[in-house]
Length: 249
Length: 249
DNA sequence: GCAAAAGTGTTTTACGTACACCCATGC
DNA sequence: GCATGGGTGTACGTAAAACACTTTTGC
Image (cartoon, rainbow over all chains, first blue to last red; front, side, top):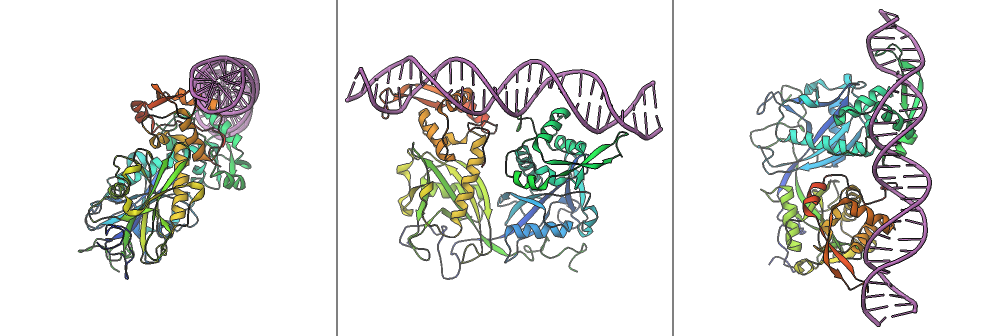
């Protein structure tokens, strides 16, 4: 018996130099980056130009460094790819099947982030040969990255059904049509424009600008900005712009 | 340059024998076990009988083994403590601050589980000297376990506000009063009994039994069982027994 | 003048909420 | 017969949903 309490070795036990029975594993971050081009929601993937799995696509990822928290690592990796900081980001889930990575046991912490696709298009690091993909045209992905994306998307839908986080995907100025397209795209579902707009106005989150966007219609549509004070107060609150009936399946 | 694409070494790179730049870390599970005694919700902690942090309390935890998935590890650890299998369990979040464990860098994946406190009281492994604690009387906890509990509780509240998972905490037969107490306890909030009961009946999740529970009242109150078929179909759906107004803060 | 998108209102329905009384029983 | 917890019903208000027409302007 190794201790007074009949506790198996694989439980927490302090040893003079590290835990006795813990197997050490590589710990990675994989980042699911969502963007929105005004028409549909898109996902940023990087191209895998080396073997194995050459010519497949991959989430942007990397290993957690020695003195780095998980959030810091996720932030760093997103910045490497997009040049962005201060982006909305959320931990989704950890993936840790023993054989998920054929090379060695690796635990991967998945984050999703929501970025403004237009504003940062040119800041994208070309080192990774990134491309934006439609959700319905995703390519073959390495490892369990397809499942990660699926899980991240479900989480996004879940969260966005109750909290107004999808605003993070829009430019500073946006039209209601864009927002409408965004919600329809995320949920793959037709919405009633009139009810949507009314709910939207009721939130008090929008500030109408004087300028109009004139590219898509003759009449032109007003630009809006987000009321940031109100937004910050409400991200944690329940604000659903989706019909309540069939939120999740 | 180590490769064709100008990719830093801390990104995924296949090397003949493992990843070049990944620091290996211990990967642990910590398990937040909720139970309900008919009156209030409780949390299962184990006593830390050895130094450092002797006389503090701790979540039940352990390390992920070499060929074990995270879910399997969480299942195993719960079984070690409670003897239970087939329990409702959910991954909450990973905690990975660099200094969260003073002995060595350890990533901890937190799960919460919902168990029937009565049924399994006697199956508890005494090796760990476990005790049930009220949420408002939690003792001092090691490391970041206090924060883990806080996060798990928030997740439980979030989830249970929308999905009928709290049934997992009840015995096979239970009274409406117990369920009512449970919801009030989880949210620390007074509810209207009449509205609660009506919503409950509307769900169609309950099957009234012929027997009554007679301990707490002279009239006696009917036992109910969960309609398991309907329950399974609904765990993933939106069914809220909470007032919708002030669900989350 | 007409096509194309923008923008706005009303009616109906359903759900949540507030609220109060009778029932069965053990003592 | 009364105290205790068990169990049920109704009226009201608000919010969601269904539904259609007018406006603007570039061509």
